Each structure stands twice: as C-alpha cells, then as structure tokens.
Amino acid sequence: MYDGRRIEVQLRTKVMHEWAITVERLSGQTGFDLKGTEGPSELREFFAYASTLMAREEAGEVVDAQMLGRMSALRESAVEFLSRERRSRGAD
Image (tube, rainbow, N blue to C red):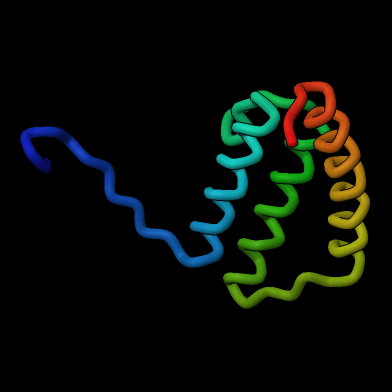
C-alpha cells in the first residue's frame, strides 16, 4: 500500500525491463496489445520467439545457429509488417 492505494512491485532483470519497454512502445505504435493476444501473427510469433531466446540466454543456455536462423526469418516478417503498419497509420 502507498498513500492508501495498492501498488504492484515488479522485479525484473535488465533484459526483462528492456523487453517490457520495447513491447509497450511497439504496442503504442501499432495500436495492438502485443503483450496480450492482439496483433498480427507476424508480430506475435516474433515476440514470442524472441522472448524464448532471451530466457534461454538469461538461464545460461545455448542459443544455436538454427534458433538464430529462425529468429532472423521472424524478424524479417515483423519488420516488414511494422513498416507497413506505421506508414498506414501515419506514424513517423
């Protein structure tokens, strides 16, 4: 409680924090709740897989060439979509 109001405390690693900020920023740019279940499959798949790889790295696990290849392909699809989405919504 703070000033009679309930608060939420989040403990995040630096990577988790950057991840949350990135997803929130892109949600604002695209108009989709990317943390939830909204948005095109290209974006949801990209963010889900990126999150998986980030968790592996933080746990000290190996991210192999095959995983990086898949990440690269997903990134290409997501970047293309974001570029179209931003132009169509008049964003800078």
